[in-house]
Image (cartoon, rainbow, N blue to C red; front, side, top):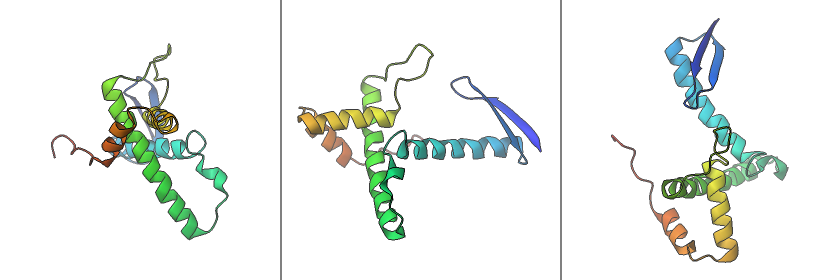
Length: 135
């Protein structure tokens, strides 16, 4: 067992006890952290998927698929909004909300109040994601 320590892009200390090499640990943990953040936003801090009480596998699978589509749509809008006007940063240096939450709030407001930007948001959601740089 060894301890691998590094700094996150935000400057936080990340220490992990592991049996893997340093490089493998960094690659695996980065992927794991992305998944953890996604599930956190699907659970209590976001879409509250746990409260459904659904236990039948086929229904849960369908619900999970729909929630993932909604999550990706909200992320897409949040990323687009971030490019236009970044999320406010709080005094401690962290964003006031995630990109998913940023997208959720804007989409909900546009749908609820029929804001003039609604057609633009719908067009954005119908547009394919751009290819990553270098591909």
